[in-house]
Amino acid sequence: NAGVTQTPKFQVLKTGQSMTLQCAQDMNHEYMSWYRQDPGMGLRLIHYSVGAGITDQGEVPNGYNVSRSTTEDFPLRLLSAAPSQTSVYFCASSRTVTNSPLHFGNGTRLTVT
Amino acid sequence: KNEVEQSPQNLTAQEGEFITINCSYSVGISALHWLQQHPGGGIVSLFMLSSGKKKHGRLIATINIQEKHSSLHITASHPRDSAVYICAVRGYGGSQGNLIFGKGTKLSVKP
Image: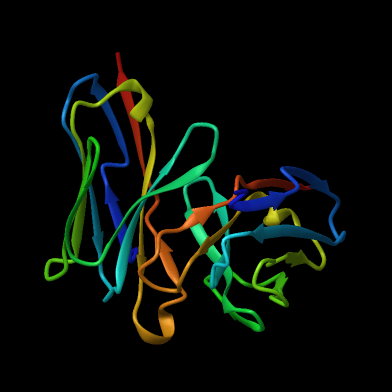
């Protein structure tokens, strides 16, 4: 049982480049979400999804796109990377939107130069 | 004012001590999560609460909905408990998908 799989673990981008962070879960979870973690800021929600075909914005959505074409996958796209997007990114899922524990991926450390 | 406040920010304890970490929030919630982030960066879920008290091994979590406050207790602390403990709250209705996090409490347990 793989749980939540995030790739890559590390990435370095130049300003203006695009990339996709991958997140997949094999637990048939309804809820999936992306967070960024910055020093002194705690975790902040970027985007979330409550099911295939349904996504919504969190606290800090600007500069990021998501889609949920299948239950399993929830990729996060950076369209034009900026140094302000240097952060550690976590994907998490839970069986239902409410009243279910969260399962986190191992994180992606992204540096934008 | 942050919607989720944790205290203390940093905590150093001797092995065996009883530890309490507090979380206060200002919004109505449907659930509260306690998470543990290890020094290597991985995050695991410890508890999810909507009322009362839960216990798992040496960890106890309580929540008082009326006072908008939750506590995480660690009994007989051990150096392997050293980690950052994070409180997160989930709202009601249309904001159910939205999780708001505290900034975390960094715990260091000395042998």
